[in-house]
Image (cartoon, rainbow over all chains, first blue to last red; front, side, top):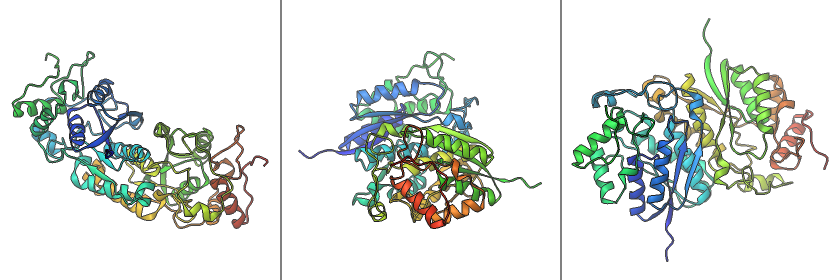
Length: 232
Length: 232
C-alpha cells in the first residue's frame, strides 16, 4: 500500500477552509488540521472547526493558542465595532476593520512548524482572492512569497529534496463556486460558522461582511444556507 | 523635536538579542521588545529578557505565549536531551537537536503583527550566520525572503509608502565581535542568559552548544563572562 502524502490545513471553522480540507482529501492527502485560538471574541469558530475536523476524519487536529489580541488593532480581536451592512464595493475598496495584523503570516508560520514536525510538505489554506474582502495576505503574490520563504526557512527544506508547497485551491473561485464544490464533496456546511459577530446563542448576525458574502454565495449557487441567523 | 522612528526587536534574553537591541537604539530607533514564551523548558530566558528590557528602557515589552511545544520535535521544547560538549565542527556540520521547527519564521511573523499595530516598519533580530550553530533560519537568504514576503503581507505594506525592513545587525559578526560591540554600548551581559540546559538554580551548564559558543566568544574577546556556571 502506498502511504498517503501528509498535508496540513489551516482550519478556521468557516466554509472556505472546510471546503479546502475536502479538496485536499479528494487529492489523496492525509490531512492534519491546525486551528488557532487568537483572542477571537467568540469560541464558536473553534467549536465549528472541531465539528468539521471530526466529520472529515482528519489525521490529527491541533489547536494552538496565540494571543494576537494582546497587540490590539483589529475588530476581530479588540473592542472595535464589526462593520455591518456594507455593499460589496465597500468591502473590496478598502481594507476592513476586521483585518488582523499579519494574520495569515502568523497562521502559515505555525502551519509550517506543525507540518515540519509531522513530515508534511504541503500546506493548504482557504484563502480567496475574489471574494477576499480586501485582505492583502489573501493575494496570490503574497502566497508565492510565503512559499519561497518557507523553502529557505526550515531544516526539512534545506536538507531534503522535497519542496514546500502552499496550496490555495479556492484562490480564484467565487463564493458560489466554493459552495457548489463543497457540496459535491459532501462538506457539512451546517457545521461551519462564518459570522464575525454572532449573538450569545451562536446565531449569525447576517450583516457583517462575512455573513453577507456567505448569503450572496448561497443565493448565487441556488442553494439554501443551513446556518442559523438571528432575527433582525 | 523629530519623533523617533519606531522599531521592534525580538528579545530572547540571550546576549545576541541584547546587543542587537543596543545597536538599534544607537541607530536612533525607539525600540519596543517582543519576547515569546514558546514552551521553553525554563522560564529563566524570559526573566533575562525582562531584566534586559528594563535596563535598556525599551518603549514597550510584550510577552506572547505560543505553545510550539505542542508540536514536539525539538530538544528545546520536548523531552529530547540537549547535546553536550560538541566541538565547533559538529555544531556547524549538522542541524542540531535544539532546532525548533520554523522558529524564526513564527517569531518574525509575530514581530510583524506587533510592529504593524504600533506603526513600526523596522524589525530587528539577533540572527547570526557565522556562529549560527546550523540553523537554516539564520541565513541571509532566508531573512531577505522574509522581508520580501512581509512587504506583500500587510495592510501597512500595501497601503503605505514605507517598506518593511528586517535588520540583522549581527549577521556577519563573530561571537567575540558581538561581545565587544555590546560592551562598547553598555549591554549588561550579567543579565543575559544563553544556556539551553540550566540547573534548577539557573546556573548555566557550560557544555551545551550555546554555552560553548558564549565561553569561546568571551575568551576570544579577551573579556570575562559574568554569567554563573554550575560546577562540572
